[in-house]
Image (cartoon, rainbow, N blue to C red; front, side, top):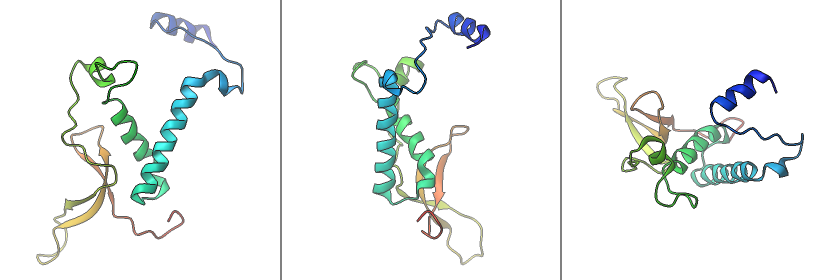
Length: 142
């Protein structure tokens, strides 16, 4: 509520609209988006059988895909293209939770050279992929 923050919003061209405390119904669009995202997270976790502690990875994947597909409000361009000017390339995307094999040089000469994991997304800081080591199902989150 500070003047400094209000001035920052004004400089950025953002119109500030306040709502009444504890009334999420006044914030319908955002609340609906949150509900939709959580439902999709639940569906991914259920479909893949991966543990619920990976909910953040599932959410990242859902938002990544949402930003690279068209919406009703902009059917001719994706949010990614509007922001970057480039058409998104989804040719290297895997279904979330897909079984993958990762090259592994550790071990002796006769040990296997790959470990099984699950694809959970792209790394934001490199051109790498995020892989979850194969989950054994042991522990509190099975």
